[in-house]
Length: 256
Image (cartoon, rainbow, N blue to C red; front, side, top):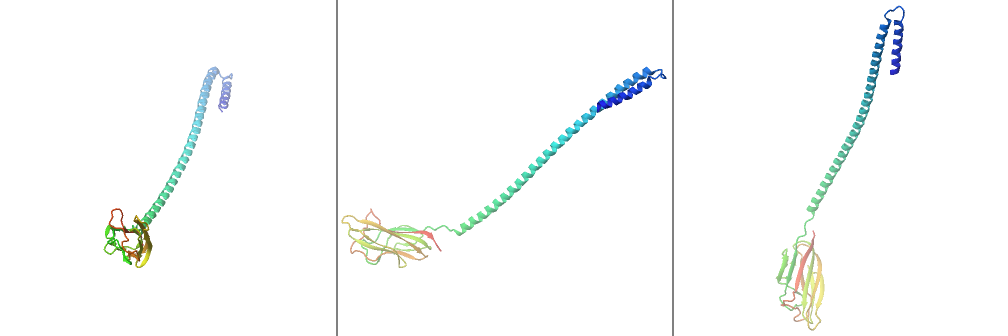
């Protein structure tokens, strides 16, 4: 483009010089020099103009590139912002769901606490007997109370009265005199919970035995120990520090 413009200027100057060199002009040489200077000035102006246009074109290209990069960055930032907002929305939904689940669990726990009452502590341990001779059909009385949580055992009658309804376990531990026997029944409201025959067939040592049974009792039901039959005379080993004859009971689980 620049070379084309310069050639056009040269052509104009050349034609002007021919006109000034004609015989009709006496001052042709002076005008030719002036035209040459104007030619140089015009060429310089054209070069400057072209340089300015080139610079402007480069600036426009740079501006377009910068605008393109900024637009890409803007879209990228916008996409990242949208992704972040979506993640925040999803997290909020998850948090709300967890809060709802937690509230439901708290309600279930509270309902479970309200519906599940702790098992009351009910048990007794009594020892000793009034006599070393157990008679036929006799109810055994254990006068010494070691524990009586729930106050269900009566050490004067030997009878336990259930303070609450539930499943109970009862045990009887007796030491039999040498060569004697005792039949034992654990009775609840005239129903036998457990029965056994305790005996010592040795000739020198007294033996101790235990029997236990389970009973599902209503509140107010009674349990005691009786002997349907036994050998005559002294058949129970008592009044010694080395052994205890005992009757025990324990509430395993409460029921309606």
